[in-house]
Amino acid sequence: MSMVAGVGAKTVQAVLAFGRFWSFGGSMLMWSAADLPRYRAWRRVMPQFYEVGNRTLPVILVTGMFVGLVLAVQAYDQLLSARLEEHMGVLINLTLVKELGPVLAGVMLAGRIGGALTAELGTMNVTEQLDAYRVMGADPIRHLVVPRFLACLLLTTLLTFFCDLMGSVSGWFIAVIVKHVPNGPYWYRTAEAIEFWDVGVGLVKSFLFGGAIGTISCYKGFYCKPGAEGVGKACTESFVASFIVILIIDFFVATFAMGLYKALYGFKPLL
Amino acid sequence: MPVIRLCDVHKSFGRLDVLKGVDVDLRPGETTVVIGESGAGKSVILKHIVGLIRPDRGSVHFRGQRVDTIGEREWAKLRTRFGFLFQLGALFDSLTVGQNVAFPIVEHGTYSKGEIEKIVADKLRMVGLDGIQSKRPVELSGGQRKRVALARAIALDPEVVLYDEPTTGLDPVRADVINELILKLKRELRVTGIVVTHDLASARKVGDRIIMLHGGKFVFDGSPQALDRCRDERVRRFVEGRASQEDLRSLQNRGGS
Ligand SMILES: Nc1ncnc2c1ncn2[C@@H]1O[C@H](COP(=O)(O)OP(=O)(O)O)[C@@H](O)[C@H]1O
Ligand SMILES: [Mg+2]
Image (tube, rainbow over all chains, first blue to last red):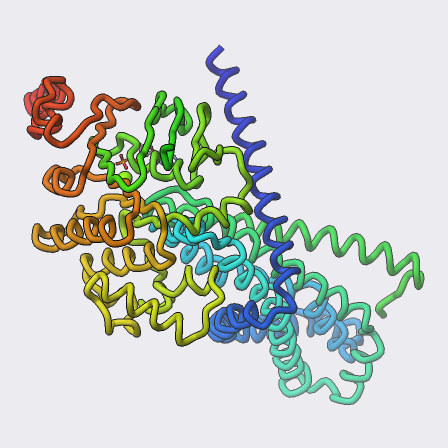
């Protein structure tokens, strides 16, 4: 009997949390849309944008650099043995733009920005600052969450671009400078193989990742349990949840984009 | 007509039944003090009054209007008529003192920059802190934070001010400054006050009426003088600061084992 009751209570809790998450997300999107054309709202976004961007750019550049290096080192021997070393740029840049750039930048940002956002909003929650907004007739979602969400959305896209760029340069460095793959064909093959479509898919992914990171980390901070312990727990949960959601979104966008591409243009061989 | 009326309010968090049928009318212009042990649910009562928490059962009324069922948007308008002093101040860390006090004015008023600055200076002068507008909340002492928070709570000249443990954690002199402020607000702005505290000296000084919350219900309701005459064991224990027999027994058991 008590086990049944326990399962029942868990279910009720899960349903309530689910409803709370979507009402939070809905309210956030509504205010984002409403505030997008307002100057005052951007004044709240810009400091967030600047701070988060500044804090994160170095890690993103390092991530991109090593991804490019590793890709190039791993690919070189295999492609050389098949006499395909001219295609190295295709492999490196395509992987970066479509998959590794967005996913790795997303994961880095989930740890770096997501953690900070959850901790910040969580602290405001346990020190009653969120309630203070409410009793002064101001919606904390609008004042606190929307600017952070918008900053996440734009920044993830922008920083993913930097990550791609850095990876591309370091891959080129290994291939052309270290391994002496001829420079002309390297770029010619790359330009031939990579289309706007691929860049677009990468962009869409990073945009969605940014949205997921912003929503999840703000939500977790917003509803964290009391005390320093509650804030700490919320940070961990927010990172794990962001990470998993990034992988799930990645899978679905990749599958959907591939299907759409085939339906529109047919199958494209890369070699 | 009472300003605020709570009717048979029940509230539980998970398995914890915090309020088990709370009834009270708050009369205009009066300061009502709610006393009770930590964790008794005093803050929960305050949060019911401003709609931060909704009752599981029962109802909340403000000037005859039922408010526990209205939407967030209507509440946002109504809340400009309340001032809320949080237990820890709840000042916004990212804003300066001046911006904190100006926050509700900017949010709801249509004042010019100069007018806002004047109101902020007025309110800060009222709590004895004019001139610190450009400081950050982290640079202030506990007592200063509370006073700034009070200045922010009264920025829109509210009809009702709710004080959550205004004197807790302050030395006796600072605590008395806050008491005087509460009395001054009542005198000058005719606010209806609700003070939550377990500081009995403060309760006696500012309260026209004292209510004690125990076990989810009110067990005493009367004037400060009546509190001293009350013979109820739970009230006496609280007033005299005695631990109950159970508390002592559990201490001894732990000590002996
Ligand atoms: N939002 C909440 N969620 C869960 N439990 C809560 C919440 N608010 C208060 N409580 C619990 O209700 C009880 C009464 O809290 P509170 O009103 O803050 O006590 P106090 O009388 O000291 O102000 C405490 O046990 C507290 O843990
Ligand atoms: Mg309390």
